[in-house]
Length: 345
Image 1: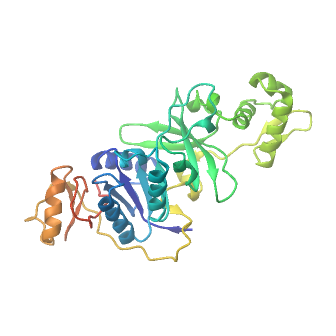
Image 2 (image 1 turned 90 degrees about the horizontal axis):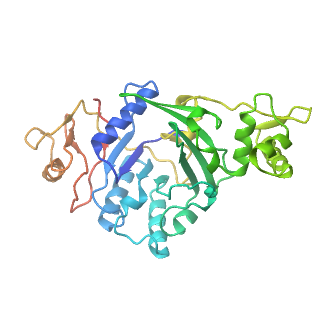
Image 3 (image 1 turned 120 degrees about the vertical axis):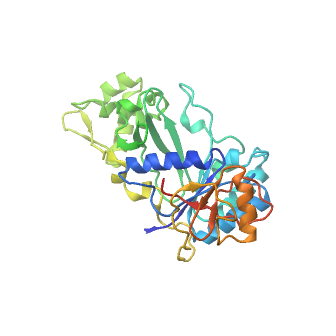
């Protein structure tokens, strides 16, 4: 396990909103600011455009094999026919060339009674088929909670669902690992697969329950419930009490900082199989967001000044002591733009 930079490619929001959210989450983790190594880059155009992808690839190379987060795939490829197999396949292969990439995409809103496994991202099924690991994010209907459910893994067994409770205040977002039976996840149960429905019902039974009791509560056959209980036992999530009842085994809860690092951005195992490279150095964190110009930036080259001028029209710029590090907010004719590290605010 080694720490690497994170490059956030944004196709939906803007830099100011990203900064606001990044700081709120960081404060929820007990940090004064987002951790060093987190970089932001607003896509200057559709990712399917060769010049835009080349610009992104150059940024990835300059940062030394970062974790790349794309938010989101469908919006980033606006105008492309992702229903076509050839287009979707080519795009996914290009994304793989960037190394370790976490792609966010949209699926239809789950409807009551419809199995979650039937939901796939909009567009060609090859977007799903070519993913190495796929995780569904299901939001609670009546509470600030999320369930992360892995539906595909080519690296090994699928992980059990991860339940998170979110607390929002004006300046802080706290993310806490919780149980599937937590009140923050109200409304999620009807969308869960049968195994997780059994796990949730068992967790809600303070004194445990028999397969027959669970079957009656869930509308399943006792045989089906027993099979699921056996599966939960193999996963270390349930055990028999010796008197015909079963009980849930308590899972870890706590803040996000207590969750294993493999579940948090910024720390992950190298999955690319390529040789380890030293991350590229990046500029110091700026002290503030500004609207600097060429004259106020003594280290600014002609090319950087032109790009800075373009980006001011869209989002402004982040300034450093020696050179501007620009928001890439406007379309550019040439590659070679720079992401900016998260500044102090």
